[in-house]
Length: 239
Image (cartoon, rainbow, N blue to C red; front, side, top):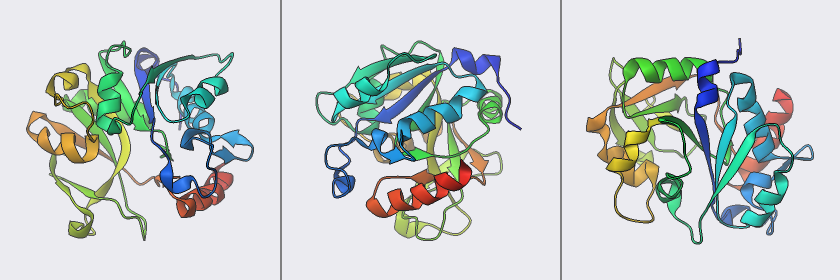
């Protein structure tokens, strides 16, 4: 059962939506992924509205490609939205590091802006507090045909390895693209301006304490035309 958590109101949500959306241009060449329509509503609105019932109230949007259109989408909201702008693509890690000065909370939620996974964020937050690691990651079960790398955890849910797609086994979980992080994580990031959280950063900080929060929920992403069409069907079922 979903319930509002007063502690989550103190946590900033960082949404990574600065990607170029190259693979979706065949469908909508002038539309950022975050604004792709679902029953006449932008995807980013559906994503944020799925978070509001848990208590989140401040959202940092990392924007780049077609960012002015994303800005125009957010007018007169009853929650706070601030923007971290990228002049050039920085990758998921670089975009997050670029937003460091805007993030006001000691721990924060970071998530991809082109996917959605119905997580109990109150439980996820409790898990993060209990494990006291530098990063907690949502782990989801892969669906047939999903070409994601996988994450392996031990009996204490501590991450012990990140695997490439070709190394995945049935017992592994995929990265759900949702993270709770301590602010200390910025001190561990590389000097590079552009890097990936998933490929360049997380595998190198396993020793700092990364934990995997397992969920049976489905990760629905809109990164390709095929996945977007599938998401249209799945999200209409959830409405």
